[in-house]
Amino acid sequence: MPAPKMLKLPEVLEEIQMSRAAFYRMRARGNAPRLVKLPNGQIRVRRADLDSWLNRYEDHAA
Image (cartoon, rainbow, N blue to C red; front, side):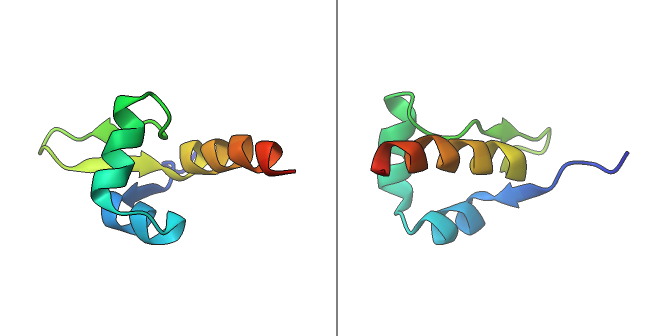
C-alpha cells in the first residue's frame, strides 16, 4: 500500500487561502486539520485529513 500523501504547511495554507497566523489560531481552538510532526521537526498534513476537514465545513456552508 502506498504511503498517504503528506502536504507541507505552506501547501495547505495556499490551498485554503489562509495565513499561517490565522491557521494557528484555528488550531489553538481545535478547529484545524490534524498536523503530523516528523522526526526532523517538519510539519505535514495528510491529504485525507485536509479533505475530511474541508468536507466538514462544506456541509455548514449549505
